[in-house]
Image 1 (spheres, helix red, strand yellow):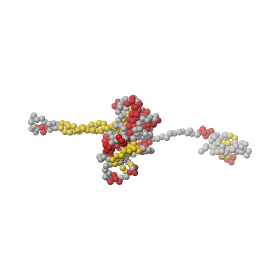
Image 2 (cartoon, rainbow, N blue to C red; image 1 turned 180 degrees about the horizontal axis):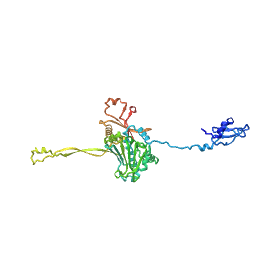
Image 3 (cartoon, one colour; image 1 turned 180 degrees about the vertical axis):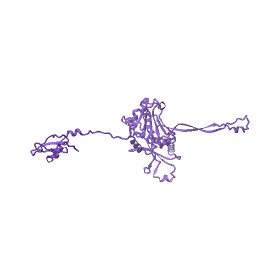
Image 4 (cartoon, rainbow, N blue to C red; image 1 turned 60 degrees about the vertical axis):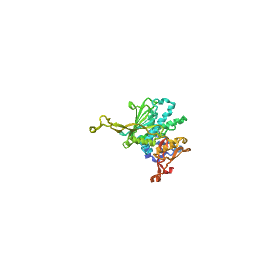
Length: 424
């Protein structure tokens, strides 16, 4: 709404019949019939008229009269960026993508496998990257007493800047960037076993953990850095590792502090089961920290009462009494021994190989019929079709519209076995 000056307000109030509107902010005052003293006024300026106006000579309709005061008094336009609550955005992404909490281990193992694949590829042209250790493996340790899971790999690791770029930016995939670099370089020897592409797999850790600590050492850096973030926090910290007991030669160690309702994932048996289900066919060895035992014979002290009643000849040698005990200890156990048979050339796979794979994967004991084939075209896949020796005996197995006997693997990683019967 325009604010009128005193002069304009007075003219409009006392000389309204002589005023003609020109625009929303201007009007003309007709002084006489000859139209020689007509003036144009702006309601936005001072009481002085801005110019003479001949109504008969000047066609004011459609003309635009600018007010310098209006331009100078308009407030400046400011530009703002959209702001997002990172913690809520991360919670939305994680819980929308993953309906099953246990897939967190699959995603983190896939990240570790990608780190090892990158190191293996780069070490061909840069052998000095392997000077710290020659190991290529993944190790998972569960601490059920404290509710902590630790996942360690000997892969390429990350520098401080890579921690910011990859873990501090949601949907920033280091693997995707690595694949793009291979493609841009047109390197025919590029490794196509890399799994991750979308940059959200790491955040699946927050499905079960309220705090995640990432300690990493890149062979391209002489320092080890620690990334520390919490599920409900919109910030994170990065610091240099100074504790000698926590230093690693190369690679990355993830420490997951589990939520109260996810403590059951910290059982070694549960971890071993998840590895066999989801990551059985990963290219690199996966070791889990397991409790083991062995039996041995130990001597038993003789009962004094029996010694007094023993009337054997002193010259006869007495046989020492023993008992069998089980000694417990903890050690690393290789968990993914079975290799993906469908990736091999069918001409090189024997009947015994098919049978062994079938029995280990589906927990069967009878030998099946096997058909190994590859489909190429718009959609490419390799598969092994097994026909069991005995038909399902349970009523539920026969009439159930869904089946659990189709297992889909992508890049050696198990994705799902929950399909409608119409799939086949």
